[in-house]
Amino acid sequence: MRELFFQVVPIVLILLVFYGVLRVLFFNPLLRVIAEREARTIGAKKAAEEAHKVATEKVKQYQDALKQARTEVYVEQEAARKKVLDERAVRLKEARAKAAAFVNAERERIAAEVLAAHREIESSITQFAALVARRVLQSTRPPSATPRDSR
Image (cartoon, rainbow, N blue to C red):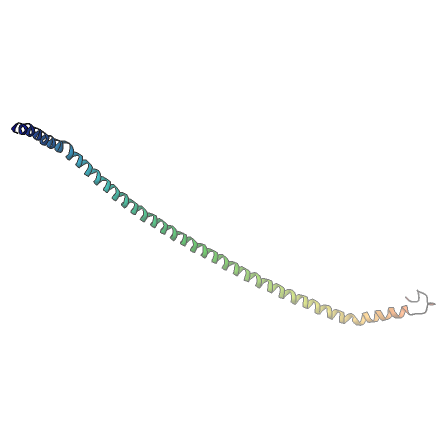
């Protein structure tokens, strides 16, 4: 058994030394690289999440600013439209007043012309009646009368 012990002990010692060397030279650097990789991955994920949050916030701010700008534009457009409509209403009111004044003036002028025509007709109605009566009386003369006598 002693021989077996002396054969096994060096193998165990070689294995322990080999394990120690591998642990110091291979496993520890490998575990450090894996840990560093894990830390970088977690850091990159956190940085990506933070960048995503920042980008989301910027998109929200942009949309809010865009919405506010659209609202301002709509308010300005509505004010301009209202101003144009008010100006149009004022012009329409002025045009209607001018048209009404013109119509009234023309009605008065026509009424005055009609009145003048009535007065003229009334003043000349007796002359016209006399002329009509003379013509009627001349056309009722006997046929023996000569046309020269009728003049």
